[in-house]
Length: 354
Length: 118
Image (cartoon, rainbow over all chains, first blue to last red; front, side, top):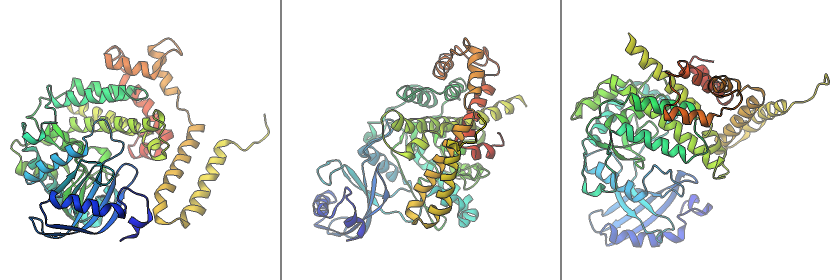
């Protein structure tokens, strides 16, 4: 047993492992399941990730495995899915051939280990955005990685409503951009105060909304930091809790927005390559090709969204009294996204004049 | 008022220098992130004491509302309702940008510099 399990009072203490193994056994149709090790991988107050070393006897998954158990977050943003719904979205993406860690089991019953959780296969590599964009290997392999990511995204976007398993996702009644802005306004209304610049950007997004594209399954948080890279190659797309029916350009805009380049601004696709690379991969798979000029609007939406989310994180301290320096500092970040959005709007307006 | 006093912003500056020079180098790697957050928070607080965060906001608010009566929340609501827009206030975007810049001069001047604005 690793020190991580012995040393800390976390969700998955040693005493709970037999119960977890006993639950897993019928869940994955095995004859016997033994969890030989469990170690905390990271995550903090919000959610824990545990690496499980598992020996399965009998059934379709017989053999030794490295799996990851993710507990449900205690405090979730109002816009995010619960763990069971996230699990179903991952399963839909997996079935469509998208590179995700294979979903293994969903523990909805808090009685098993104390909190709901899901188990997936372990993907190798690193997901740390700041590290990925500064990795010398990415300097060389970034364009190929961006094409790979683009192709994966296009595979995801081929999933169109209705999907039986995803009945819990609302289909947008109006254009996805309109729905997105309305949701952000509503979220801000529940916060500690409105921000004039953010409202100006929201209004611009409403006024400038493009013709919608056919509704697709959208990841909702597709960016550097939310995929695993090993040796410069993509191993898995992570963090599906914002998955929803939307406009495919939402994901491309979120990926490209300046706030997710981790300081490597000249690489306009997530700090790893150019948007042309990302779109080349995307359009090699996509049913309907997307042009680079279309992405600018969705980058502004991405900045507005991250700005609003940062403000709401700050409210967890300001309004709800959560004593966290990290939340307070995040709450000071909306101005960064507002400035980038206002600058992006200027560029778009200038482009129209010339 | 000529007596020289140690100002709050001096204390914060000295504390963050001490954190940087004496504490951070001996911290285990696991605590570096927390230390960086503390250093960042101290610097924001220092700039918040000495910086001017309000003039830019009042410059816009007083242009729209009775002097001293406007609030950012009201302005945000009026922008949302369409009461205030670039037709009623042609320099609205520029003024909002000035407010955002003033905020960033306190919270993240390096970010501001990276965008080529001050």
